Length: 163
Image (cartoon, rainbow, N blue to C red; front, side, top):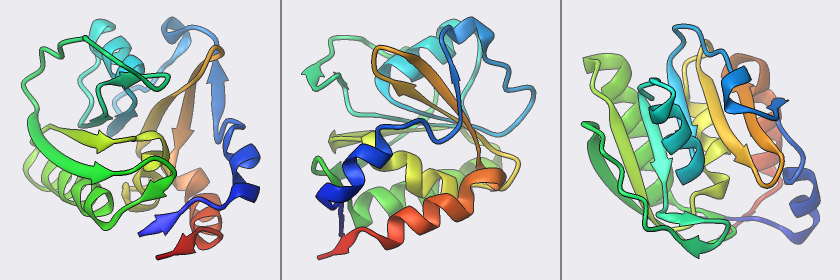
């Protein structure tokens, strides 16, 4: 398990990619698509996008969400306490990406705990041409291109404490 150190919290609050104030401004083209977060995943589906992998925790800004996802993606479950990246989450993301790229299936990972830090392993594990979308609370949606950001994500993960 990787634990987020206190000194990284401020850095991770800054967008890792392009911040878009409105979801309508987001253009993912025909890229492999990963969404992280309940609001981001819901917005993607409502805008006609079909994420190859989506990661949710049924919570919005740390409050339970009653939103029902009507999606045909295969469900994977993972445990991931707040402020961590567990082996369970890492393996679920890896399995989902392999299944989506290898067999063309779509996956939704439902996290028991918190999915916020799932952006980092998603960037590291995804093919270089992948677009990852995640929410920036009260600001909009962030678009990250895995190939352009993977070394930064690896650098950040190396700063996590291993337990």
